[in-house]
Length: 210
Image (cartoon, rainbow, N blue to C red; front, side, top):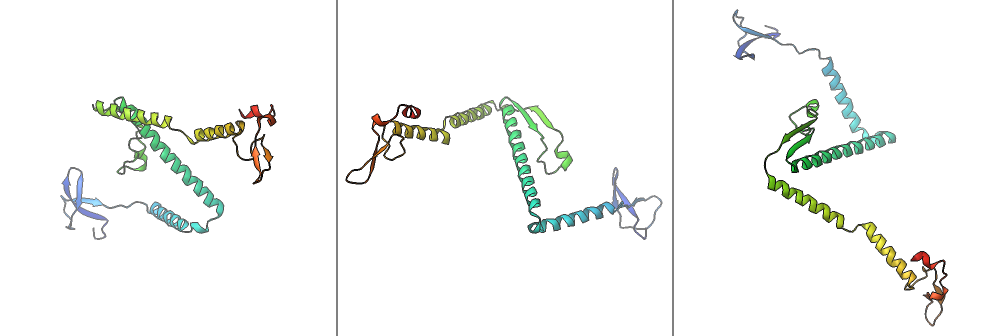
């Protein structure tokens, strides 16, 4: 007891002992043996932590290929995390609208659990509460959003519209510059102007722009 390998303890409850300040030996007392275990693993993890910290601080002098690998790895992990969150939320909303709570990896973001416990269980499924009107309102809002998004013009539609307008100008000879395949220059008192008389358009050229 003088070397603090064995300490006198007081019983606080069932299976619970507390170290006592009284170090005198008593036959009816409770004693605890302190054993920290093999410190080799602790030393090894401490060394790994120091090496990892130094490696991170020396990142600017890493070889270029290692920087590229780290960049690809970071982007891949970020995409996987965002994709997993999006899939979890989408699946939950779909099942929640029909009256059930279905979560993929329900403990994934629980900070009170360890790494292994965060991935267990793989899913949870149970019936949700009432809130029928609220679920119907959410379903209507989502349907309205998708309808609005589907009816909005895209950049591709704008490009097709502009291309058709440009080709119509070429065919109808309203193009004021020399891009038309049938435009011929005419010299007037002012600058050279390009006109597109229909009689000079070859039959095998104009149909291509219709």
